[in-house]
Length: 257
Image 1 (cartoon, one colour):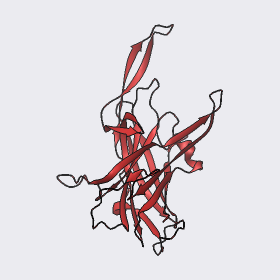
Image 2: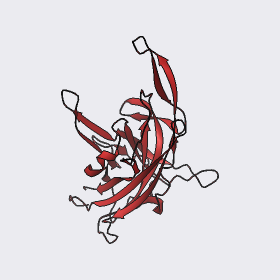
Image 3: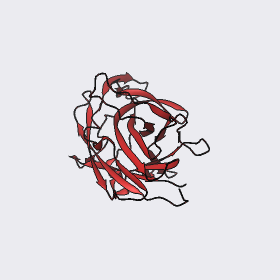
Image 4: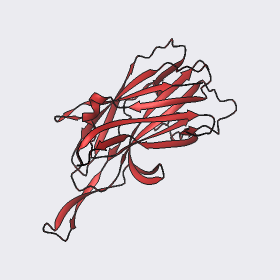
């Protein structure tokens, strides 16, 4: 590949939140809108993996409520503790945390040349920030797999993961000295490479010798950090004056070679 910034292809994924009472769960559904994707592109083409996103955000998370006694003027308060549905341990940097699995997003990435190094960028557009709750931490985990996960087969297909997945906090907040929120953003970059080195997030060091480096399956899994809350859990994504609306996730893929 020549040293040029290859074509940027955009995918928008809408995640819609449906909610029920605390202790019963919250459910996600999703659809995909594929925009500005030129199938005759000379460089990189990004498509929805498995040709579908419907049902990706279909997991639940639950909180149980209880009371706690404090030594203060208001001795009793209510707390909300996460329970185990769809929770698994993940690592963010060097921190080991428990997180709810909200769902996955699948990107099929193809190129006319071998992709030895490329970057997957995921973000929520600025005009959609207001639909994301500031009360929660979101984590995006990226990995490269040989096949898409399947819950329809018996036994379920468990994909082989090449290299180590990279987890990052998806939200970033900036506050002033008085604790007021100045700005927030939701984005992450994943540098995927077949060679190790500084700045490489996912190193594909165990690809088969006959692996086709012109085609990759990139699986991005969205998590919600599980922790005890001192307030009643509310909407996580998609609340707009009590309306259920979609939240766009935009993906861009570029490569330098």
